[in-house]
Length: 115
Length: 176
Image 1 (cartoon, rainbow over the protein chains, first blue to last red):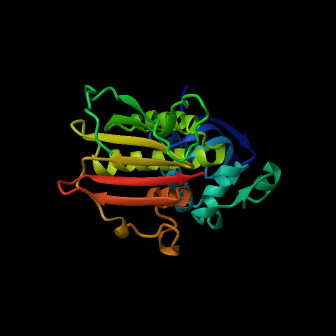
Image 2: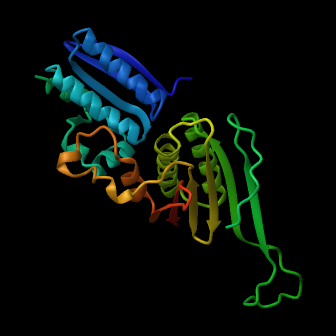
């Protein structure tokens, strides 16, 4: 089983990536990077990462979230995070990245906050 | 802690050795009229890892088993798991630079109310003071440099040492 499974769905002009597994150094981080880069190549620049199924992330995975955020912004797009687990929320709090990312608990609210 | 002979054939395997130190000399204990059961004062598990990223998961699994056997609660075990993954990643990627010829040695030791973890690579050594604060505003958007910060966040003590012949040893303690 892959370290990180990613399912893609469309909600209006927002692409939602439902992620399940771990975002850690190696396969997990690479899977996230590949998915985001592919969406950008396809011109899909409004991306909502549903992290409800992500129970674990390491510093490499956190770095990949930052890298995704930067890459999407650079293309004039927007990244939002959805349904952070408590552990992920704690990690983003201590690394002060919750001040950078827009994170939501409710999908409808997250979707309505894309410009 | 004396080093054990490392017999693992590289690069595809790692070894695990448990050492139980039994202390039958307990002068503070009053005699019960029968022989006391052996009293475990310290337990150490040692691993030798190849310098492959895949070994991070192996070390984390060993750390989880060890923490459970040592009686560590779930919250503290999560911190140990996180710190071990980051430290092993540092050793493999930044220390040994994923060189097949180099190994990472790991020792988990269970002591009363704490776990001590020692991880040694065969790299060139580094100065932890030179790692910038990843939470400083100018570093927030950097894609790397958070590993040591997370180790310090989740463990009670973290110390780095560079050996006289190179190699970095990181010693971490988690109390519970």
